[in-house]
Length: 291
Length: 318
Image (cartoon, rainbow over all chains, first blue to last red):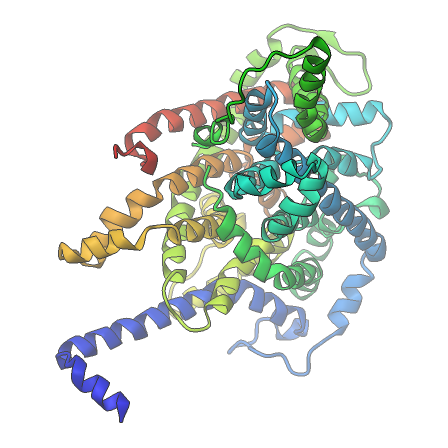
């Protein structure tokens, strides 16, 4: 009843309504269709990883392999010291996420909320490290860790994370600047120290932003390829991302095994992304990364 | 753009100038240095891991340093060698080729997708996640997948076959290997997409209403409201895109190893080969400085050019 009266009231010309409907349907088609185009490589990987080798090139292509061939994963797993690779990756990632997040938050607080003479000049240094190519420091850093006898250990992948990461410091500082200053002024009057303000006032308000840099850190360290490639030597000392490099040379065109390996690398990240997604999307929207 | 907000909170609460005893002045000075405690880790890291290595890299670039043998000073000869090395030229050309298509292409795609994902459509969190997942999984995992997609009898050529097109041998073709890597890069636009999405949500609604009142259609709104308001984000995305694009290496290392016939030899890949396969650290360092100069120049040019097209709200009078 109410619906009909509402319809009567509007009295839009039928052509216009038809036009609006077509536009809406078109919009849905593009959004949903595009999302399938973007997910296609991942679907395709999942499918191939569960397909028999002899079925890879069957025409018409098999969309859902039945029954799924789990043996592919077993063969892939036995290709190398997979457990060691996963263990190494987990050490690097868990340490990095904690270290990078804690340090970057603290440094960003220093840049956003404390006052000292050189502060803004130093912040230009943060921006510079964000903008200057890391390629230049690759060789000297390697030589330094070589001199420290740390090649083929995880230390060169862990130590640099203790000093904060320019991009995360930048994101957190921009976010802290959006928090109302009256909050910490009030806390100051109550006699709180900077550390207390950071812990009791600023951090509780910054959970989405902190989650954002934690997700970035997880993704970047889990995917990191060049650094472990140059610092790690022996097969059992590699991280998963670099270890899987051997798949390409060893399995070559055995794509079903290659895809099983890719799954191993990708699934934890998809999982982590889903867990953090809500905070993450909010964090991105809030930080705005505007500059 | 980032420097604009540097002074955002430097407006001190003016304290009345009170006569202070020396003791109290000293205490006040110490209290004012408290901020150092917070940024201390970064300062240490900056000196040890950035500033120090930069200086060190400069020194190394003047040395003939094959790891294992004592280095000798050879002046500018590494640079002379680099400028006449045809592979340096080739890899710079390849890198420029990639950048020229990857950066504008992925910016446009990211912008369009962000625009789509900013519409009111049911189930949007799911669609957003689906667009973002390939970026989450970028790097080695994605490279492995695309090796298979680009395989001679892989999915892409299968699809081209439906239209009667015989696809090229993507990754093993000197002509098509680079386009293949560029196409693949368009699946990793998630981070710029999310930045744009955040920006779109900040465009004031009243501007669109004003455009509507003036009789502007969809395109007029995009052209005269969305794009001008988004220029700071587009600029940030371009700056970071160019810096990243000049240092692309993982895909080439995994998928083509620089081949075929050096068609995908990127400059950073060449640095890696020189440094860690040929162990010519001095030479590799000198090439990294050439790369530095190029990225630096590209960034400066973009910042200078930005004055013409990047729009900042606060510059508007009134």
